[in-house]
Length: 205
Image 1 (cartoon, rainbow, N blue to C red):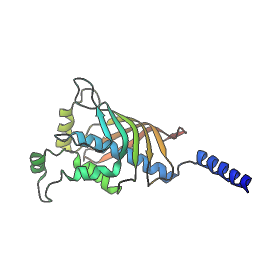
Image 2 (tube, rainbow, N blue to C red):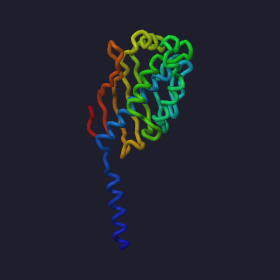
Image 3 (cartoon, one colour):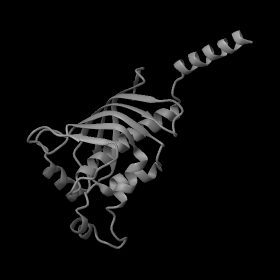
Image 4 (cartoon, one colour):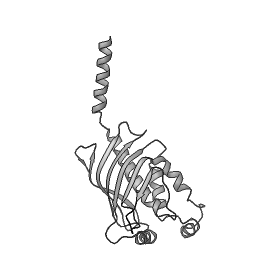
């Protein structure tokens, strides 16, 4: 009997060690990483910048755009209430809301992503880092100007190394690689994977 128990324990440990994330796990993890990155960029365009739980923005000297976003047990479901606090009355005009609360020009985009995927606390917990590249000559002023004028932004290249856990995935998912955040002439946002690896395996595109 004892031998059987030992065998069962060993088998369970082996199965756990080789368990792979499902396709749904990967989809959820990628959505969590891209949504959190968009929310992070939208958040720091507020005045003052929004403080998103578990997120730290690192800045180089004499630069006003972050060069790395650090996630430390950052719960994506906790972002939504932070953005909702900057919402004004339903009938308030866009420019009136900017004047009233210094709301960032991409807040509505962030809210759209956070709500369409229905993130709740505990659904996705992020640990790791994302390194955005805004392009040569881009400053916070030009980024704000582009967002205000067109509702969109120039392409942002993001290198990530992030591990996602939480209630919406069955196994932890580690994502490394690069994706683009870009918008079209109408201001619609698009996420374009360049090269991503999932848990160290073959590239995901």
